[in-house]
Image (cartoon, rainbow, N blue to C red):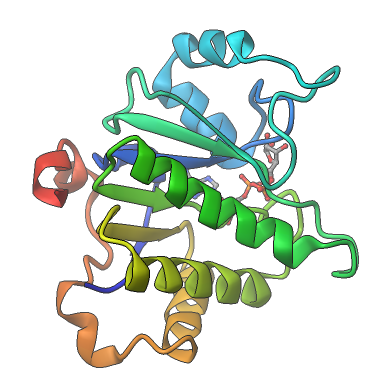
Length: 201
Ligand code: AR6
């Protein structure tokens, strides 16, 4: 197996779990968070509102994860995580971002998910430098895959070509051989990915 890179809209993927790059309130926002809430429908927000607040406005601290159902999405679960806001790199941003990936994988394993798709957490509004973030995504997912059986299928979703290339480069640098590329799902029309949950298992 290898870590897969796929370019497109994460809300179309029929995987067991998709990861949401949320904020600490878990009440929605822009970017991929907005897209996931729109595609999942209003029940997703209702379930998020039911999650306990640890302190006012914080249902999920930075670097942590929470799971909900996926409602109208083709996925089964949404794993909400909160990436760090990039400041200058000295405010524990790398460790916090690594936690987002690792803890999402731990939660996915606990949920029995065989497949999981990640957006580029923190790489939009939160301003994390793309290549540094891609290196963390590659290292964490590869380390997980080498030491755990499930989720067996791990997909890094790039919304644009720059991110797609950054992931490919980071995976190569992290030791994923290009000879392992046989099952790279690559760019794929959204329609083909609908309802593929079984095929992903
Ligand atoms: N599918 C896949 N990737 C996407 C999609 C999509 N449909 N839409 C955007 N991206 P961002 P952050 C990419 O800003 O930086 C929200 O308001 C996007 O191109 O969504 O973690 C939350 O509520 C980028 O590469 O997340 C938070 O307040 C990546 O997803 C805040 O933004 C992440 O960009 C979180 O900021």
